Length: 231
Ligand code: DX5
Ligand code: ZN
Image 1 (tube, rainbow, N blue to C red):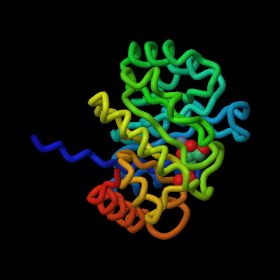
Image 2: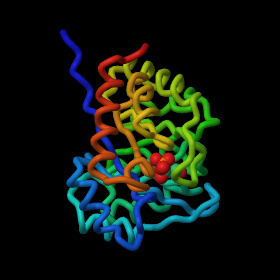
Image 3: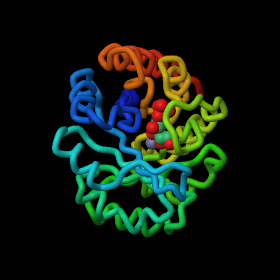
Image 4: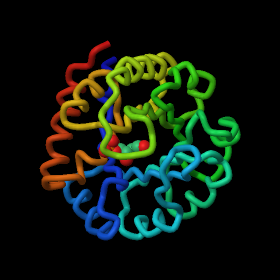
């Protein structure tokens, strides 16, 4: 039987948008064919930056019907799952390096009716996901040290994506394999070749040029990479 082609999705990260014109950014990305939105929540402890909380997530919810992927870069994700779910988050992504117990986060996220993802910082080996992988709807491999948009992609991310892909395939999981940080039309190609399916793009969508054109070239790269998967 032939394997189903994987669904490839682009998720613009609103951290790179103009917060003074967020509604317009959302509209432009939707019009350009975005598949989801990625919202970066930072608490100033887990990462050295502070971004936004549930109130902003709720405001975005009122402006789009696309899925919202909530990336919790916070010390205690368990404590805030309910708030971000109520604010409209569809997938709740916690860090394996956080203080919360992954088993509890996964259970509670699912109980709230969300999908649940686990994220790994660049220094965290992929083995850290093994214990939870069967229960996850998403594995998110960071391409930069979390905290800021617009950083350069760390090349060691590529073999890590490949090994996440092998692990998911081995258990027959259809979970999303996300890559977040430093994704541009050129880094999207090897990331897609390595088996990523969900591409978070911040600066490459919002920091210059037209959102339409930016999404179009990211889409072309992702499709090109996926056609030539490297194992
Ligand atoms: C970084 C965030 C990313 C970031 C992506 O900590 O998790 O989602 O906003 O932005 P770019 O694509 O510009 O690296
Ligand atoms: Zn993110």
